Every structure is written in C-alpha cells, then in structure tokens.
Amino acid sequence: MATTTDIPLAKHKREVIDRAVIRFAGDSGDGMQVTGSQFTNTVALYGNDIATFPDFPAEIRAPAGTLPGVSGYQLHFSSNEIYTPGDAVDVLIVMNPAALKMNIADLKANGILIVNSDAFAETDLRKAQMTSNPLEDHSLDKFRLFSVELERLSKVALEHLGLDAKSVSRCKNFFALGMCYWLYNRSMEGTTRYIEEKFSKKPLLVEANKLAMKAGYSYCEATEAFQISYEIPPAQLEPGLYRNMSGNQALALGFVTASQKSGLKLFQGSYPITPASDILHELSQYKDFGVITFQAEDEIAAITSSIGAAYAGALAITTTSGPGMALKTEALGLAVAVEIPLVICDIQRGGPSTGLPTKTEQADLLQALFGRNSEAPIPIIAPATPSDCFWAAVEASRIAVKYMVHSRSRLHPRFQSEVRDRSSRLQALSSQSRYSRAPVGRSRNSRP
Image (cartoon, rainbow, N blue to C red; front, side, top):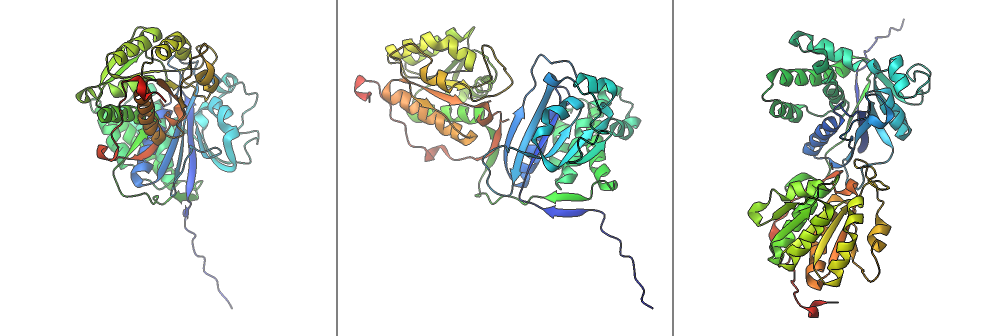
C-alpha cells in the first residue's frame, strides 16, 4: 500500500522583480512625507535607482479625513536605470477613506492595497463623501487587499510605554513603513538611525517609533495573509559617490559652479514662494563660496535687486513661481532693454492666480515664452530631470553672461524631490575640475 508524506509548504515566498512603484497616502498629519523619504533613503542605500514624486500637504491644513487634506509620496525604484517617478502604482498604502478615494484609480489591477481599517468608521466615510464601506462592498475585489488595524496594533505594541493616545496614533506610519520593509526585504537600520537622531532629546519617542516599525515588520512575518515578499536587486550603476538629490538642490549647485567658473560672485535676490524657496535655503549655505542671498520684501524688489547686482558685476539670479513671474514682468522688460545678464528660475505650480502652492504642474510654458510686452524675447531652458537642473543652471548662466541677456529656467517641481524636485533622483557627484571655464562677456561685441 502506497503512503504519502505531507511536506509543509514554506510560509513565505520571495519573488525577484526588476522594479516597483509604491505610494504612501494619508492626511497631512499622518507622516507620509517622512515615511516615503525614509523608504527612499533605504532603497537608495541598498543600490536601487530611484525617482520620487512627493505630493506635499498645504501649510493650512484641510479638515482631517477630507479629500482636500490628502497628501502622499510616490517612489519608483528599480534594478535598472529609471527616468520617471512611475505612472500606475504597484503598492498603495492608505491611512483613511479619503486617501483611498483620491488614489485608488492609480493602483494596478491585482496591485497590493494596504488599508488602515481603524479609520473606516461611519464618520470617516462621510468625511470622504463615501456612501458605503469599500472594505465591505466588494468594490476592491480586483486588488490584493490587506485590511490592517494599524492604530490598534500600534497601540498594542506600545502600551507598556505609557504614551498618550495621540502620540501612539502618530507612530502608525512607522508601523506601515515596517510592513513595507518586510514586503521588499529591506533593512530597518538606516531608519533606526534616523529615529535616534530625529528624536534624540525625546528617548521615549525614539523607543516608540522603533518599536512600531519593528512591530509592522513582525506582523507581516507572523501573519499568513502575506504570502509573498519581493526582492529588487541593486542597479548596475557606475562606481562613484552618489547622493539623493532634488532638482532645487541641483540648481543651487549648478549656480555655484557657474559662479566659480565665471569668476563672478553669485547673488540671489528672491521673495519666498513655494515651491521655489528651497533654492534660497540651499544657496544660503554656500557663503564660503562668495554667494550672497537676499530675501526681498516682495517679488518686484527681488528681481530689481538682482538687476542691480548684475549691473554691479555679479552673476545674478532670482527665483519664483507662476504668480511671482506675473509680478516680475515689467522688470523683465527693463533687463532686456538695458541688456542686463540675469537668470530667472520659474519653479512651476498649478494656477490660476495664486493657484495651488503645494501642487506642481507644468503650466507656465506660454507665460515663459510670451508673458511680456513686445520686443522682449528671452531664451528658455526647460530641464527634464534633477540632474538636468544642474546643467540648466550652468547653461542659463553661460548664456546670460556671454550674450548679456537674461535667460529663464522653466522647471517643473517634479524635476527640481523631494525644481522644489519635488522629486528626487540619485546623482553622481563629480569634481568641479571637469567643468570648463565659462566665457565672460562684458561688451556689446558678445551679442549673438
């Protein structure tokens, strides 16, 4: 008589893939930017190529749980070179019904959907303008749904610390982050160091966030719901020193490089405006390179101060966004008329009028080309990636100084991370000596 022996199957299977797009979404106060940036840093240190697209929340927050209050962070990482933050999403982590409603259309069929089920009470559904609970009405059947009680599980993991309910609830984003680390077989070591540095003066919060993250990792390890984890091997990048760089950071470095190579002091006159303010913040750190930053009282003062600096012999730039470009228009004509070398950076956001300060959009092309009165043509440079932003800054400075005109860098914050790039990419760092010295023109003979 034949006999059979039952062989237990492996509890978890690991699948090797070449790329993934993951998005974290929740309320403004749910820590989605921190969660996304920490996951980004971890996969970058592992050796994957990355591109990100943060959806920043507004400083004036919409009511919690409502559709306008949703913010998010998207990351595309791969074992190959990539060029965009991704389109359709492979994994979506949402903290409430509003985040689900705003983002579910981008999730691929059979994609992984991790939902904080503790936030799907009747009142939460009403805030998100939902008439039924999507966790119960089978509307999510085409996705791999994982309904997880993030708040309750975080509370259980941290109950011995004696934290108040609000502090415990704030740790749920690290619980979700721990789950993602398990899902993609990534180490928690880098985020552990971040937590220890971030909350160094609050040891109880250090312990709480570390425990929440480890609890999320252990939850996936222990539950039978998660059958598969994924492995994305490191990308075959050229050896060298890399940093996770945003487009705004690349712009700042490009202008410093242009200043050094032209032998001119760099002057930035700008009025703070989202998402261009990052350039002002970044350049203010380069005083040792002779960089002068001036925070003006308004957009007109910003550009006219830059015109004055250029007249005095500096490499002058000013940064703004769409509404600021409208205010600078008359001064742009002045710079054209008197042949002043000037670089204007338009870090684009949605409109019209004051528009949407935290929502990026490639919207200002016609304004860049034609948004002035007659006889005021200017060259336009439009970078496509964060690394392009560096070269755009160098080239715009070269054109402005050589031909005694002002040029304009037209940037989408997506390409400025997290031009603010609001997205980020890995960028190889190079010695300044590789860049040729920029020609400096100071006479009418330099005109094209």
